[in-house]
Image 1: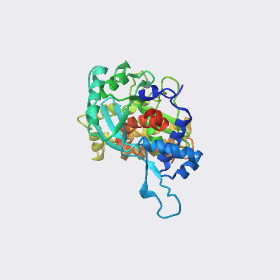
Image 2: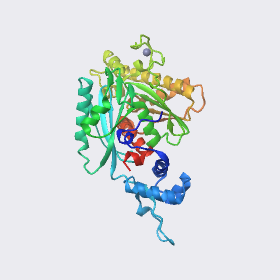
Image 3: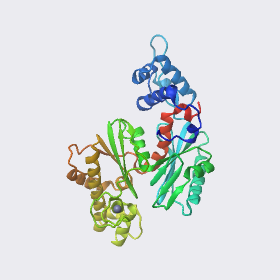
Image 4: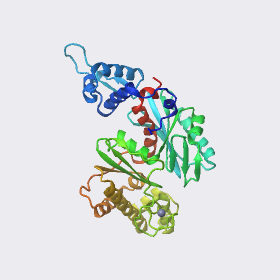
Length: 395
Ligand SMILES: [Zn+2]
């Protein structure tokens, strides 16, 4: 069972094949190492020069590549070799992340640079109403880029994603078999690609982040929800059916989980849970995470203890999963980590005390920061483009 493709690809007969995989190889080489001469692409991809030249011409025609004239060496004898790089001026991918409290959407170019993003409180209502409202906001947002060719919308969300049928189950939002793809496609008029938010974030790390060159990597995410994704040789592992879960990993503590036990990871470290504790302890008046971080920074002992406890619970969880998977690299993402940088040291120390494997330094923090959700949602779609450039653009 292959990866699910957006509508634009599903409808193309004979999508894939040698031509497609050659185009993907050329595009991939330029993405990771460009600008490159055609000869360098041939070396990197083991394709023949005529094949590379043909694919480069096709990809330039599709506005995916462009000749980078100022990168060409001056002088020389014979035909000049003009390198090719990604064409960042035309094609863009939109991404939407629906969170429990916040919905983020953004637009990236081919290099994964965020051209713009916006955040709104996740609307209230029936799933269809919520999705329609979000899709309308996204449609307005995309009007700001009339010069861009927007290839579609990536939707990244927690819960269980049935990418094949475009359906979503999201327990915290109370959604069951919601036809998310159909609603978003109807309102935006663009093909929609669904992905789980943690796999999407891990993909963003593989394409544009810190884990692209690691042989194996473990991506660990925490905010309202927690999750992990594993990639080997640049390919994300996707298991059958439901995605794996670390929500109920026992990290200790006395926070009650909806499953009936205490000390489950997600219930303990979820932002809502942390904010509830902080309000109860009188550290903050309103459940606002930035206010909590500010209170801790200003010396509030309760705020400091709550954030340190959360960081230590995360450190234990990261160590447990890391010891099972034994990856070359661990990448940490999500606002639980990036919005409380003063507590990263607590996390790292607890991680180092808990893990039984050597090499505790192989833990990095995502460089996407608070843009991680928007980036991830866009990247799900960009991955499809990089894997199937010809069929996705109807060539
Ligand atoms: Zn539980």
